[in-house]
Image 1 (tube, rainbow, N blue to C red):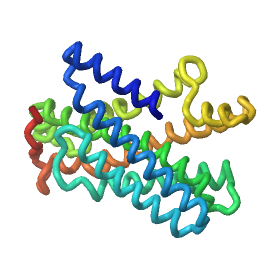
Image 2 (cartoon, rainbow, N blue to C red; image 1 turned 180 degrees about the horizontal axis):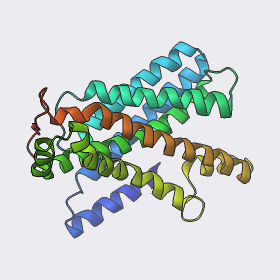
Image 3 (cartoon, rainbow, N blue to C red; image 1 turned 30 degrees about the horizontal axis):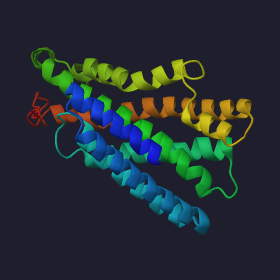
Length: 254
């Protein structure tokens, strides 16, 4: 821990010398990471020890709530009132993960095993949040840039969905880019976290690779599903009840 903190201080010093402007935010972010990881470690240890399904569900609901807040804070210039849509999207992804990955592939005993479900939920939820943030930011940015084109399409008889489709496709591509990059680099450029952890724990590297591929494949599918779902839920926010273009975004942060 002391060596890791020293490394952060070295990075902070480099930022200060190079005048990068992150010498204040970097130590704060590191401190938050230490506290958050320690808190999660304590909570996970307690929930694993209890081994009760309701504690697993409550912790997953807490993770969902935090994920919604993080999504709202990280997405750039999105309309207000999207929290219910984001919650529904992330909840659907988590339920899909539990039904497909855990119950059909891993099949722990008992089915609610916190040692299995919670780490997998955390990995997939984290990647889903990143995809939704990118997709939302890109969609509303693109719809703003295409205002004249969208209004012209509406005037020529296009439906709001048809007028939004170019932006929806652009947003979905943007949301999928990190996942595609992770798939392409896995095993050659990087050894992903789950595989690395199993190898460090002494497990067979080939078995670790198989489990890692399962996780990456599930993340890829969930990313596509979540991007499609969230954009299906929010694209109408760009239009009035009479199908007229109307998009009011908060001002850009300085």
